View (cartoon, rainbow, N blue to C red):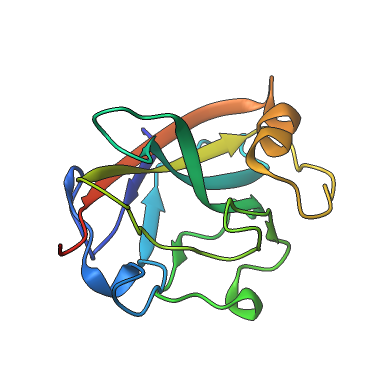
Length: 158
């Protein structure tokens, strides 16, 4: 079985609804996953935008959300998930908004791509104390069993 990440809010390569952006309520989309490998000890979810600030001339990858140590028994995150609603044991990292929690699409120009990456790990990571994406990626190195990607797009109303 292959790891698969989906959302009822948008299809792979589809438009992310306004409710999940800075122009809407800025709440996280609902997510579901299946096909978690049997040896999985934890999951990591990273949401980022490689098109920042301008898709015609990207200069950086903007990180929107970092979750790690999601238990492999979890199969969903509800829309607008609050920290206290996260599956037991799940820890959050710091986004490029300089805070924990979801920060939705808010592209300054053009249509951006947002990659929602789910990783199955053969280990539970230590508490990294509000890490940034590179810290989590370093800790996961050598532990990724499988990964799934759900990509959505968004462009502000100009």
